[in-house]
Length: 412
Image 1 (cartoon, helix red, strand yellow):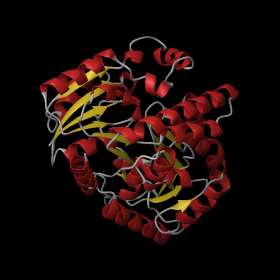
Image 2: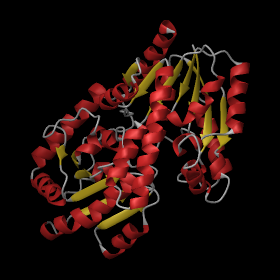
Image 3: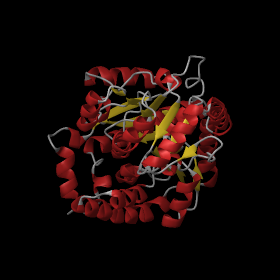
């Protein structure tokens, strides 16, 4: 069958987060069906990995072209002018649709969708985020699938709760309310809605009443993320996450200002590596003063850092969906200390393949215990890898997605 995949980003390189999910789902889907791709080129995202935009698109086109049939990249309009996103966010306060919908409205994208539909015959059209629903108007009598990487309104309400700035708290809350109405209106129109976790599937059904909702979990390339036999640095910690994403920024600040002084006072030889593009300036300055606090920025291959770390620390307490950084660490057989929200939607068990903590003191207690007990660290890691192999391998995830797409035709 032929599938048209509409994407909010160029799904390359598969370096964490939504890039990783989209890349692997498309690649796995092409094992069973033909996929054409229309993707927005988000320059701010591509610039994290490439210095030259023309080169970035050329490499992405070449790599994605090894499994996609037809590909088109479209510039994101608000990237084309200075402060474009900020101006659009302000303008959206007075528009019919919320910012989450407005930021991907593009005449050039409309034209590409029309072109692909006129030149090809499709059995299913996949929308990779709710922000792409303006392009539903082109679809006539073709089953449609909508992917929810997060339940976006829920994530905005959670962000509003955690926000201290009064104006931003109000802004996120009103955006969440308006987007909730969009979700309630459009989700039932799709043949299939997919989410990253059973928790989000339940949330979506309760929110929208959509009938056909299935979980397609975030996964792991288990042939890439494989633990090695390298020697672990005995008192080393690690955090990984792109640092222009607000939950990751707050997590790193929590590590620096809440966990680090506490653990350093009782474990003077402990060290930590912070991996992720665009680290905030205050964290870079903090690292200059703390000899064992290492901020590396973006690294092309995170596996050696995960391998060498004794403990993976993830105090993320905001955002939505499931965290691929946790899945990667589980696959690399790491002992993990994390906030429960960081593991939301992942079938981990407290004490079996992860330890939960919320306060700085709780993190220190768990970290000290694991640093002192090699056997507990090893058992947590072995259980973590087993969980990934049984439930989160991308081959099995992709196979399930392919079957669901086939079911869309049968139920249409």
